[in-house]
Each structure stands twice: as structure tokens, then as C-alpha cells.
Length: 292
Image (cartoon, rainbow, N blue to C red):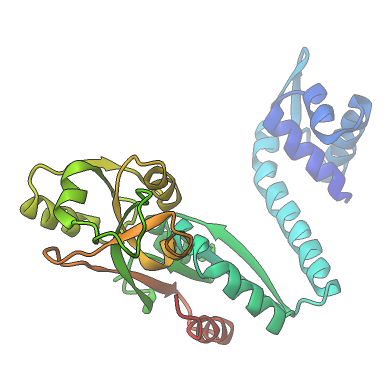
């Protein structure tokens, strides 16, 4: 059996039209017809009913479609594995990472890891922390690096890092050395507080801020990198993990505000796994050597 026939069959079943199938596969329409006829001869049943220019799967075609997809998946998986082997990879590691973690320490860590372990093929999925637990549970990835902990009984969750959370404000153009420090109350009561850009600490922090400063105005902004841009442009202030604003603080684009009356939480990074195999252990041991 030619696997091109399977690919043509699956594409035709999904598109419902031989002409559209030809366009999607960059082959001629007569070639599509030949592939389908050859596959029908091979399996010994009619797979499609023709209704003018439209096609519809027969009952046998619907049943075989399930198996055709599985066959093609196994075939393509085998090709991918051979391709990895030919490139020198002897093992694979798939990682789900929250956008926040992907923006901070991870690029440097991954670069260092791939240089030390060139035989490991790495694949990375950027997934919001609230979905990482399920990705690990369903074995879509080997490891999850999340801002949220997991208490699922079938998963292994470990704390990797704790990051200090600070209040940051836009640079106001003054000389940082001679000017007095920014006042916490003034900063929070005269600016929007950009909130909920981290999944771990904002609910309790919001209550604490509202208790101390009931008149504070809040604006929810879901991503840290957007929050930073808003602060730089003077749209508000926010409580952010130190690692996410280190460069902006050094470059003077943001200023840290000393908080005395509000208890500041920590932003945590967790590893989540279903199996504690050697490759996962190796990667986590490696990443633990890099502090945020």
C-alpha cells in the first residue's frame, strides 16, 4: 500500500471534494481519482459515493477513515524518529512552559542545556499555566514548567524557584540618585494598578491593596510583557516578579517603589511531571542550577 493513497483519502474525506483535495495536496485532480481507486482496490470496498462534484464517504469509508488516520500517524511518526536519529538525537524531551517563564530564564537555560546535551531533541509548547497540568496528565508533554502548583494525585510537583515580587512604576525623568524615593501611597492612588498578569498571587494581593488603599483603581492586563509596555508608556504601575523587570530597572526605564505597608508575595515556578524518569530528572537538575 502506498501511504500517499492514505493521505489523499484522508484529505478527500475532510474536504468533501476531489478538486479541493488536489489543491491542498498540490497534485492534479486525475491523480486524486487514481489514488482513491487504487486504495479502493487494495482494501476491496468502495470508500466514496459521488454526488455530482461532491463526494461522501460510504459506511465502509467512514469505518476505514479511523484506521487510515492511525496508519498514517504511525508512518509519519516513524519518519520523524528516523529523521531525529539521522541528525544525532538519541532521546526526546517535550516541555510545556508558561509564557512568563518563557520570557525570563528559560531561553538561556535551554541554550546551555542543548549545548551540553546535543543528543536530546527538545520540543517546547508555550501554554498558559492553568492548562499545563492537563497537558502533563494527558502525556502531551514530559515536563511542565508552571507558575501554578499542582496537587493532582497522579502528578509530581516540585518548587523550582521563588522570585521576589516588587512594585514598579514608570521612570518620571528625574535624577534617581538625588531625588527622594517614590512614595507607595502616592504611586498607588494616582495611577492605575495593572493587575492579574500572573496566575499565582494576584487574588490575595488585590485584597491586601484594597484593604490599605480602598480608592485604588485597577485594570486587568493578562500578560506581563504587555504590562511592562503599559508601565513604560505611563499607563499605570504593577506588582511584578523581579526577574521579569530586571533589564528595565537596570536600563532606567522602570523604577522600583519601596513598599512598607503591603506584604509582598513571591512568584513561584514549579515543575510538573507524570513520570520521574531519568531524562526528566536530568533536565530538572540542570535547570535547578540556574537562579532566576
